[in-house]
Length: 416
Image (cartoon, rainbow, N blue to C red; front, top):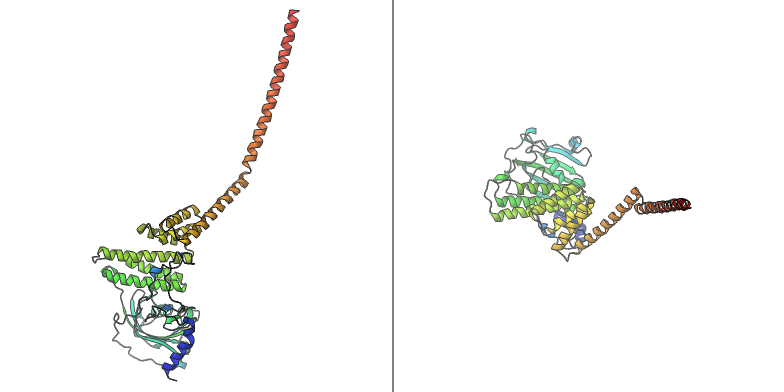
């Protein structure tokens, strides 16, 4: 069986049943499209069953930008002085356990130009990458894969190992699925869920990151959009901390000062990306239970767009989770006023009103328990005052009658 027919048989056997033979948009050449087996939907988030915590439907493109950029990097012309190929048996003990847990290991196949040539975080690097399964089955080969080191643009295995490589070095990397495509796997390249990978990596080039202030507006829009879409990928995978990280990089790009003239239309385009990033960041922060951070993200959206329904809804949810039911209800009422027919807002608002009522009832009961029964005490005091009043009135009347009787007796005696 030829390699092509073997690979086709492998794909047919392992992937057709997982995708239900549906076309998955956005696969292209992007190595980070997720293996979900479903088409990306376009349903309104407010009407979804996700309680408005999923990403905005208009914020996820079906075709995220490819991580490859064959024209962005330059190959290094300088080659290492010696080719240090060795037999597998002599390299068995040369594995570097990068994280100390045995799940990400690196072995040098050919030495590079020395430790001083290692790239640093934030630099743009270009690598030659061969991706294989643990059994040696070739998945894909990318002659020039370009990405920003440390920004989370690629799988963690690459982000962590390339910064330990020397220029020109070729290395073999064994990565546990946790540091590759995880429990979801991938469609492009085709990687099954929870599959370990073997990566052959050669570092070709490393250049300083572009100065954001010198980027043209369209370059900034494209770069910020790429980081945001990478955050969407992480969100869909459930890697919410990495999603927040990618959204943060996108925000830095949109908020950086510029030495290039920007038109009002281009400023509006950057603002649109910024608002989307903040909204999605709030959703990810809610998933992480980072309520204060999520609240700040919602407030930032509302500063720019006071009538943003999603931000009002998420702000209401955050406030409710913090026990601020009155403020939460006020924000949800504002959202409902903007979209009166939205069932999700109606449902959440009804739930919070009921919970707020229960909270007030519990507080009143607690106060009564702490202070006793003020109604009963006041009645007892009133009854006590009333009885004392009757007693004093009776005593005073009896005394007056007695005094009057004595006086009358004296008057009668005097007349006699």
